[in-house]
Length: 250
Ligand code: ADP
Ligand code: MG
Image (cartoon, rainbow, N blue to C red; front, side, top):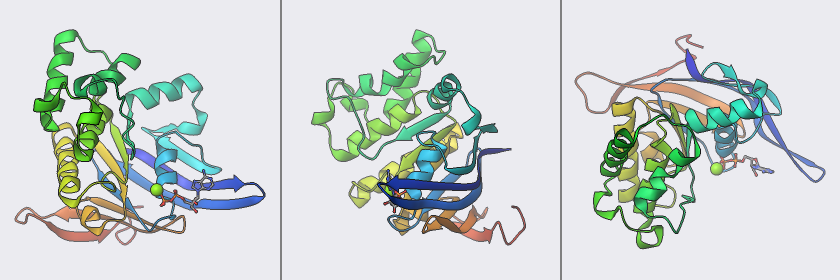
């Protein structure tokens, strides 16, 4: 079963008397454990689509399904549960809480939701995340005492702390130098491999797109390509590219 499915989704923004068609008839499926890049030039609808999947916004027409649930049919309470327990968002601007240190920022979402974890399991999990993002030496630092790359690492750990099934990242490397960007992507790959977390990230950087297993390309609010990249058993990089439409999997 698809973990995310969009069916003929449209999103029209109204600016005064002007209608802006940001997304125009988009359909695709994402499966559990996918490492998906949504790519396309600026203004092609990447952020809008991530916001629709993340239930931050509602489509004007069409349906979005998350874990088989039609998001438009959910009541506020069910949406809150979905946002807290299934979805994680890595925001471009990090949105860290300045007065909290690294560990407290990462732990924060656990205080909001009802993630069942006893104290020692929680401490162990926090320790795992802090080490995974390479911040074991910085647990007591406040955001103002960290570099941009380190703040982004905190934001990633915080997005993962509730063990969401799906993590969305809107241009996660856009504000970072290429070395830090690469490290952030490798961290997301590690989480994808170790925890089978589904990652959906937007980017227009070809180097980042090349790391995805599933590429959805947008232009002017429409999907112009949707393909999987499979790594062959004897190769380190992608060895076979096939188009889902071409092999009739849609
Ligand atoms: P991308 O993330 O690929 O740059 P966006 O999804 O942000 O693209 O935007 C797609 C289109 O929708 C653009 O033309 C943009 O100007 C427009 N748009 C996005 N958000 C809004 C909004 N809140 N109000 C009006 N227009 C918007
Ligand atoms: Mg955007």
